[in-house]
Image (cartoon, rainbow, N blue to C red; front, side, top):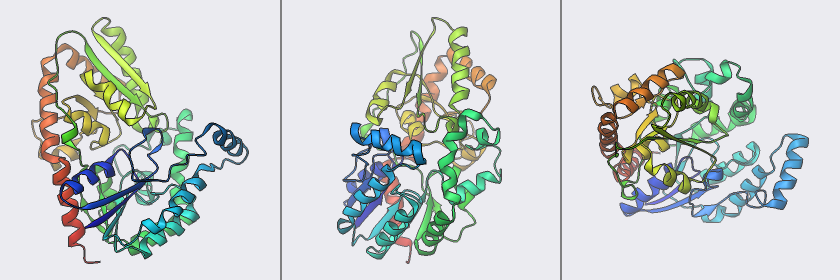
Length: 383
């Protein structure tokens, strides 16, 4: 089967490609590397000129004058130049409703081209889109990544601006076109199931694929200090609830002087990111999720104790009654401090939870098993 994967967030499509190739399929990736993360791709529509020294000067001047980012046009143009190579695929999968990340009108034009020159097209619900944003704005969940927006946190305002582009008339046309023409919509974790489940095009959830052949689990050493790691993406830090982690870590650093190492990084490429946290015992991921995202799962596969989404819905779905595979992080500093303190004072729990985490990812997220689930789902769709 020939498969085209369009767009990339958090390495999902890269790992899926590796699983599909292992099963004997031909797979092509096209994406822009997802910004500073710089994920691999076969064809890149990265805004190379706009990210150069000279181009960035022009980009910043234009943005300050008009609030328009010209890198969107470059991404669209680079994608357009690949169109002749992006045809006659058996399956195309879009990472979300705006996988090319160009201007909305150009996005619509390019997506229609993709539909016209290929067979089945599937859509992932991964990250924010029209349905998920509407769902969160109606406050249908106990908490969501919109909490800082609802709480009118001034510093967070800029991080939410782009999200409302999914509510514009032009994007609503894209959304309507996609759901009229796709063969199915797939949720990538439990956070996206509720916004999708009543939609006629929803065909189920498929868990994130993790390439376990590239990850070596390591039993946590409990001698010496407790090492904690927080990797910050400044573009979505409030949506991840990083400010709660930062406050909790300040208290922990003071409370356990000489007993902990705390490492915090900001906006580093993916390869560097995964190597830096290799020696940590505890990784702090996000507080507003009900399930784990990609960074959390890779760390869990390595045997780390991860503070992330592991709420009631997650425990029920995977039938995890007494098996604590991750620490359910909540937007509550005192709660986070109490959880961290317990682990620092009970080091054997780090080994126990880390081992359960690694076993869980092997069972539920193995990239070849997940690739097989995608193939089954794509093949079962009639359109």
